[in-house]
Length: 354
Image (cartoon, rainbow, N blue to C red; front, side, top):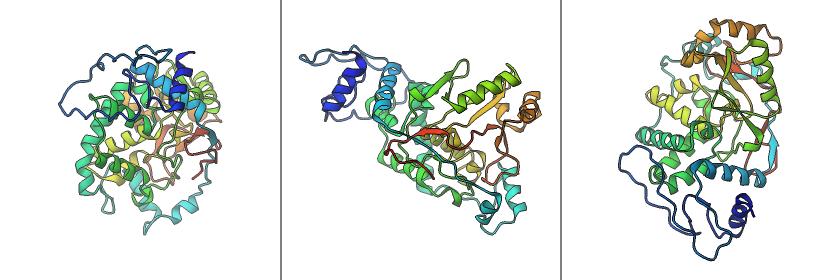
């Protein structure tokens, strides 16, 4: 029996919570979080598994452990297709509270400015912002930046519970993340649909492909084919700068942007979609010019010859144009994948639609 099948047997019988670097019998209390400041280090050597279990698993690295979890989930979780909701300009403009079209466009074109109608974090949540981001930072460092794009909410709780160098999430931090995820984003001024409405949404490794040299994944099928064709037609100076992103990654990005925006949720949502609302969760991706770094996520990208070539390709659509009705800034780097992009949820086999 191989590792994968043995792991599934243990999970099915309830004899073990999850195979980690150490044996964790069912019902064993999670270790207390270590609040001592430290840099990330490799976990302590694993303890031996109790005698009598045959076969035994050798100690796994964090990378192997993560892959095992993703593999067993790929067999246990059903798939679904997301159907994109039609969003006409007229419908979206009807949702604008007491604003003219010019006022709306002023906000998305001056996305990093502060406006009188902006919504801010509550004081209690402001205090939770830094420690929550820091814990997510530690998980990202532990599992790796590429894997962090795929990791699910349940998996971050697992790593936080079982590795002292990360530390267990406090209940207040979990409530804070849940509140941010389930908030009505229209109150911030973001009018996009909820793409992945289940906070436990999963992206399965069997459905994605890692793009060499980028540290990012793309969904198999339309996303991968579309990127490969664009890369071929535009040239090797074009690269993937962000691919598939699960809810945890989007939550991390949104909280970090909220911190940069001094707690201004509206300002943060003008820069990127709130968690659950990103089309990166179902197939969209970002491209940029090799060597430009962070400038690829600014208007500077629109001045490159690679962008001009993109626009000249008749089959490429930009999701967030300079007159978009989502409430988010112009993103010339964000490539739109059409309706019925493949995605996966963890809450059953029904279509996961907004």
